[in-house]
Image 1 (tube, one colour):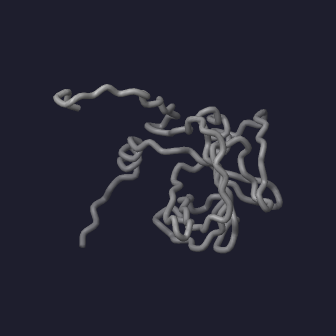
Image 2 (image 1 turned 135 degrees about the vertical axis):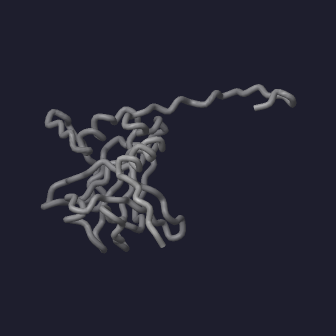
Length: 172
């Protein structure tokens, strides 16, 4: 089988069309809270409750988290863009980052939802590692709109109309 060469820039440009939620994945690093922004996070299974995060090889997370270790995930709301930027590499030392803790796992305070998970498998996938983990704790917070990322920029979700008038023959 011949493999076609897909250039990384072309794949990145294509994938930028996909809107995704924004999370901060947190863990303990030398006794301190550490984290990274991730939009490559998803639910894998409901029973058992499994999630997956894709992490760049060579990242601090990859150097500290392995099978059996635990990490946290905080789903950010649209008012938490500064936290996303901070944990995404644009560190802001003036930002007061507040954490909640569940069994010593740091979680972003006031996020839309939080969960902790224990890593069950790590799979290499190109220049990334796929961390599959079993959810041990979860909390759903407020019903604020989520922070979205699409096209290289943060986006806001606009609420759908609460009333739609439609009758046969109107078409879509």
